[in-house]
Image (tube, rainbow, N blue to C red; front, side, top):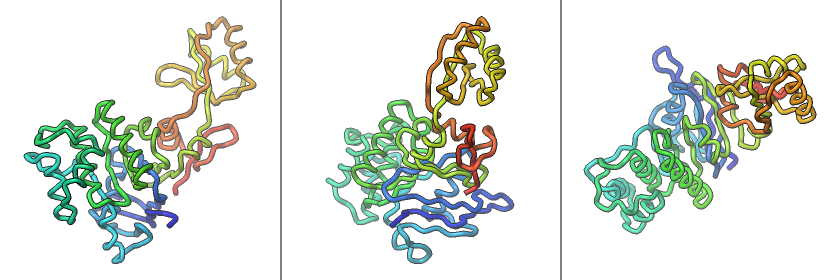
Length: 319
């Protein structure tokens, strides 16, 4: 099986609004696929359709190579956490799991305790789920999605709103599910720097349209590196560097200068800055992040076709 998920011109329309427009996504078995986009971009709509919670207006999709009526028999292999987990607030974590396990014919104490240990909730005892922190509720939601040993889990914003330790815990858990249980994971998140630490492939959704799809390796090849420069007057430094004919440079939000890396010209740049009575505080090489790339292919970054131009600028396309 080349792909565990493939969508074919998947479209969802609510009234006159296109929530998902002609989307073609491909996800390989055993990878973590990050779906990226603003609120309202269409991420949840796509995930709901793939989970069987919503029907497409047009188009189709395959899971495990099956579609249509054949797909219904495969849905037990899909675990889902869309939006907030549906918990019984007066029940313990174990009892919440047991309710679903009974429905799926997996009422086995050792099995359920193993799931609680996997998600870091083995010490919660009889504590009611209604008193859990947000991070604990999210971990319990993931445990619920894992009942039945699915090959694929679909998670909508599972790390948003968590504290730093909670984010790390969920990241490590998802990596373990991929690496040790070979579970394929589709996940959406607004925390792009965190998602970039463990995802294997990405799809960028903008206004319901998939505008780019790429692997971690392709991201590194497209984005490349840049030189970060700080002086005692970065506005003046920007003008000096631009006069040298180097136009692929900009001021970051924090006021730093970011220049597409040109190794053989770094010495010339520093020499010119000093010649113009500028004090050079910092010159260092860095790499573009997932967030940088996302901004470059959405409205803030202009248009592109998913390839790097000769000047190093990123270009994107509708997929």
